[in-house]
Amino acid sequence: MSLIRYADDKAVVASSQRGLQYMMDSINEVSKEYNMKINTTKTKIMSFQVKETTKLGSIMMINK
Image (cartoon, rainbow, N blue to C red):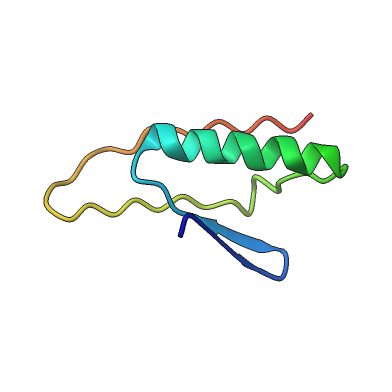
């Protein structure tokens, strides 16, 4: 499962930063079709690693 929704909240799960960026871009495009915006001040990113620690880069959000 890669997307969990509850009311107006969403949890997106990806196995890579590239996968997460792709999913966020897709959500952003669909949101724009319905004149909705993602509230970036309420958006959080969590990273979990099983065996090693790696630095999570940045995920870009463009609301236009």
